[in-house]
Image 1 (cartoon, one colour):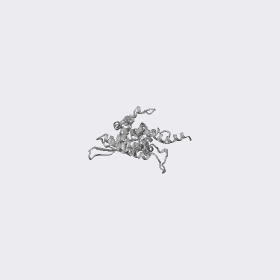
Image 2 (cartoon, one colour; image 1 turned 60 degrees about the vertical axis):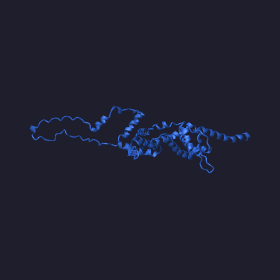
Image 3 (cartoon, one colour; image 1 turned 30 degrees about the horizontal axis):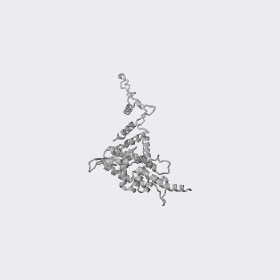
Image 4 (cartoon, helix red, strand yellow; image 1 turned 180 degrees about the vertical axis):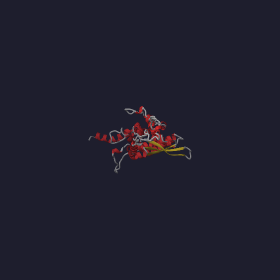
Length: 344
């Protein structure tokens, strides 16, 4: 091997180290003190590396640490930014700022996604990987710069440049409509049942608690200072449960199957086929010569039963269609809301 090749191979690690320092500066706005924390933060478990003791070397532990720090730091920032706002508003705002989708988008916008080391050929398909790397980066910053370093990074690099905290806070995510739309498309009966209504001792504000029921199967509960807030929280929690628990979906559709099977059974008795012989006079006249001419009974007009009448009233030509009528998303949600609240 030539001397020049040996020199190039010695320089290569230093060149890569310098490139990583520069890339991290572009992402974070400062140079690391201990680069080893950041190397680990960017190492996905798929690489399969181990340390000298044989233990896995990846970013999962730093991800755990960063997740806890983000809740604390972002909660602190939101608390200071919105003085006087209730706990529910603050919690909702923090949740949107640290959601997996938000962190994944941030990792992409900052250029962090390109630095992740994984066994795959491309990280573009995995937003979860990017979001996890962001959390691990926060954990690395904490170990390298302390809590104040994480606070500076989130305030100056993230909230000052990439996120409008006011726009995020007041952006309404209608989980209730999403859940109603899902249930309507799957022809699942859904309702919100109020579990309790009480008044806070300190503020005197009313507090509501609602629970979602789908085909009679209990979903998640939500609590808030208004019915809308409580139902939104219950809907969000139920949507998350639908995603992570296939058994929950199975229980709902099993209950739906039982309900539809019962609806297909006869709901009224079969009419009697025996004809009443009321047109025959069974009484003999006492004096035949004085028998008056029997008047022919007037033919009875056929009458509909109340049930048949109601069916006729509900029936119209719009019910006859060769193809199902397409409904807009707004019509689906409106009909679902009407069905969900008809018993409240």
